[in-house]
Image (tube, rainbow, N blue to C red; front, side):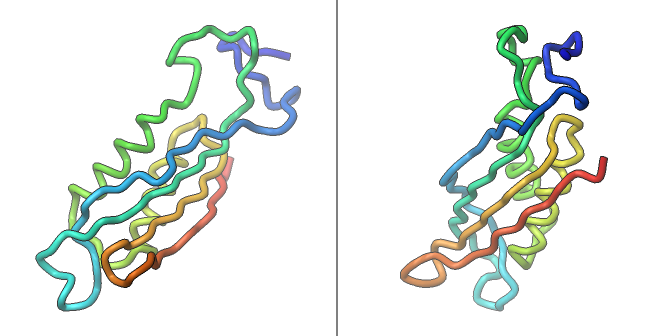
Length: 131
């Protein structure tokens, strides 16, 4: 069963689709340690969103899907907002923003600090919409 938007209805939907942003690097002032204040660090973001299945006969238009720009804008807005100390806080707030979009069913977010060690350290969270 299809809704007029071309998306599968909840009753007839099987499974889900996923959109993602992988290995996006942005410089952000973040950190709880004194040496982290006043300096920007490279963070690598990998975000995967579970969305309702896209129907093959849906319009081939951006309005028919959850846009990748949703992820990029949410990261940029949080990075430009009030300073955040913890990656856990950044990830939880990013998930909340993304899940506020009605087309997003779940989010998996990985954020890694690239400038603290020779490798990466970070956090990964998963959240589901409460609909």
